[in-house]
Amino acid sequence: MPKTLIRITTVPMAFKVLLAGQPKFMSENGFNVIMISAGGKEVKDLEKEEDCKHIIVPMTRRITPFRDIVSFFKLRSVIKKYHPDIVHTHTPKAGLLGMLAASSLGVKIRIHTVGGLPLIIETGFKRWLLMLTEKLTYFGATEVWPNSKSMMNFIIEQKLATAQKLAVIDNGSTNGIDLKKFSKQNLNEETKTKIKESLPQVKGLKILCVGRMVKDKGIEELVSVFEKLQHHYPLQLILVGPFEPHLDPLSSETLDTIINNPAITHISWSDSIEYYMALADIFVHPSHREGFPNVILQAGAMHLPVICSNIPGNADIIQNEKTGLMFEVKNEDDLYIKLKFAIENKERTERIAHTLFEEVTQLYNRKRIHEVILNTYNRLLKQHGIK
Image (cartoon, rainbow, N blue to C red; front, top):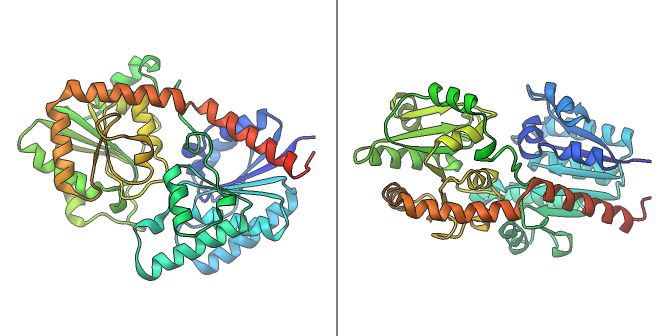
């Protein structure tokens, strides 16, 4: 009889992007998989793409105490109905509510994957509150899986969970990389041409940044440095990702520059990131905090030179001047120096990019990550006497 596995994320986008293919893989390997998230435009295609049941439970990414209590009891009701053998959560809010709900019902195997910690960049009361919610999440879990070694070390240093609960899956990463999709050899030339023609025809090197257009992704520093470099080199900056004015808005000055600078192109979303990476010359990831950034792995698989901030998560993948270039987080002068170096030393950065490509393809193949997670599920079932 198939074992029931419930996977919970706060928003459906996490299933579509962060966990793509994983529910389907588990379903094909003996599990009855149920996905739970809030509603959203992605829900329509999720069941078809993953060939698994999806249930909507409203959840918010912000701190909303009354709505969170309602979400908790709705989650608890769904978990009680399906009697899962494993509940596995991702993202902070889904982790908090899902782990506490599963714990209250006595689900034996309760796993939370830590993909990033907003508290790292917070201070004062908000940091204290976020620390408390993480501790509650880990208290409710039987297993806590940080998706990088540096994230695990941070959790131990901050005493958020006991070391016995913690484990990093394989070499890190939540879902690995689809090496069939992120491959220069597998691109459709017609699609590549269409995307190239859709971009403003700006002469010069193309600098790409993919992620949410918010302060803590380092967008303000990148835009500022790009404007300075424009005075000396022909460049184009391509930004791919949504603005989130309700969570972490960019300054009006940065927004104005993005909108009015003809050498900057903003694209709110794309399912074809690999084509933008194929067209770009340099990839910049200036984030202030990360868990284990998939976009760096994706850029690596596409042979794209990477420049990133020297923070936990990024540093789990990139070694400065060996697999990429790193700059001090939030330091515009250092980012300027590294970008200038990459612009002026194309052959050197291409050699560095090739080293990253070799590491990514050897260590982070999606199929490998899926198999390691599947084996871990089966080991835990056996360990808990669930047949």
